[in-house]
Image (cartoon, rainbow, N blue to C red; front, top):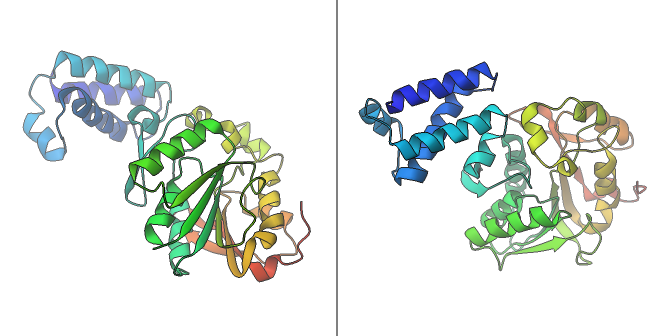
Length: 288
């Protein structure tokens, strides 16, 4: 069997299983299998030049195993162990949410308010991608990153070590604000659990392989968001900002905070998936 025949066979298998982006996934998995087994750096040019060559037996076996697992709707990123975020690769597995493009707006918006030596708090850090990008982009900033899941903390630590950020980012095993340093931050960012119960009951197959505690936000999706917003005013400097990703839950967010005028930020997925609040708005807000 040639490389081309193997790829086409994989594409048909994935299409038959109704896997989204079957053709792309078949290509990415072949590229990954070649790099893993044959230790070759591949790409479109390499493939075009070698597609009629016989695929090595070891590569074929590993590729078929990958395709079989993708057929079961295991996310591509869990199979390759990597996802790109803001142009950088991050290690991911079933213990953390896969970083998605919408979350990049939290970094972009933060960069507009960049200050020397900023103190930043990243709640529900997961893979640590947000904390790492903010530490990288903000010179001399100190970042506290909070995560409740011990398994996720291990993944965040791996990524922090990978980018040499041990001295810039402090990881905390904590439940949101509990157990973290008693200080104020110029910026709090978070991609918390926000999926409402109805949506949790109808998740796409791939999402069932991601940590449910990082997704489930209660009946209206706002259980954790209420706690974050309710205490943020006590943890922000006078000129501080809170930026929160809430996915498709804009209607529930508006209903949860009728006394607040949420500022919505544009993302690749829409104009109502990430909101911003100032410290001034949060003063005196009643806790959830």
